[in-house]
Image 1 (tube, rainbow, N blue to C red):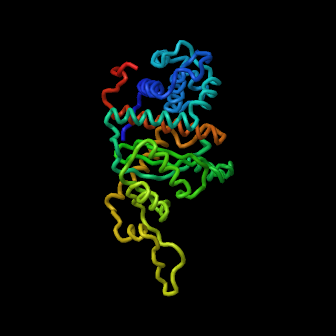
Image 2: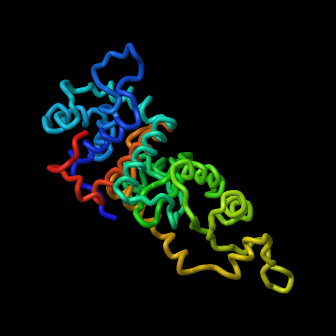
Image 3: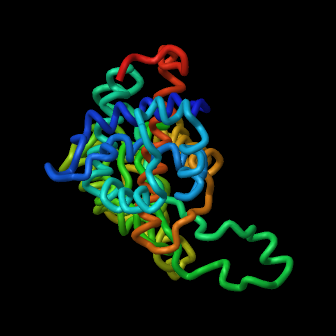
Length: 314
């Protein structure tokens, strides 16, 4: 899926989505120097351009067109943006913003009322910009491969690569430890008929939750578990749905699971594989901002009537 490359267009749409989701001011006695939607749009542009807080401050100061698009009469200080990120990229607010972005996708007919195929998977992110190849060759920076790293579990729509729900945690951790959380996070925004997952999510419990409790067709390949029998043959598969997947596995439909690998590739190529934040809470907020930026970039690229010179009034 192609994504938008126009910073001004992304800023316009981010401002529109934030205005639909948030009030102008958090409290009646706010200083009223900047509105909440303006600050959210600045944070989205920050991730889109790959800047830190000081970098986006300089960009806003030097780019008059961007200030005009965002309706800024003065430039927010980088400490103001940092403090705004703590509030506006917290989990409840970010979920509200994601719901609004997905609503705009439905209005643009990019996202259907109910998704036909969705895929679930997780990926880890780097916490440093140093190349792993460089550290391996030079023998320095032994802490590059840390025991804990930011991990994000995602459910996406395979037809358009939109991210429907996420769970942010620390790795290494087995995928199935976050399967139900990720499923509930996605279903709070969008329903889907079929869920595709790799063998990391293969267990009878998850099949049972999807099929019996939620009416979702789960397609996950079955693994052979346990030691071999004395005669050298694998032990029989237990569980009704696990046996069903072993006997009647739909290979053609399951081939679309690779679309979620494309989503991870888009995230890391367009927005970077390394996080600038150092603390876990700040890293979580940065990941949420990247998820919103990813969906907005897809929405703008698909909606041909949203262009830099022809955009509806906000």
